[in-house]
Length: 53
Image: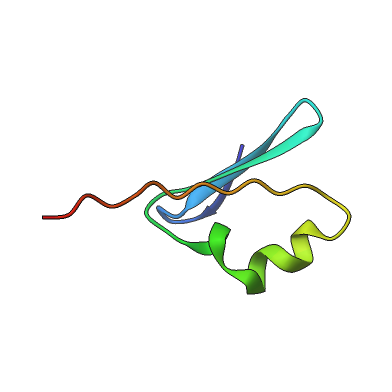
């Protein structure tokens, strides 16, 4: 597992997949980050809904 930065997340490989976990961030849903990464690959991103107060 490789750290992305202090408290930001980490990535690793799982079989043929690459897995990135980001805590309380939104890098995985930004087009600037995901469009280049997804060229020729499948990208799955999940951002859980934020509960309303």
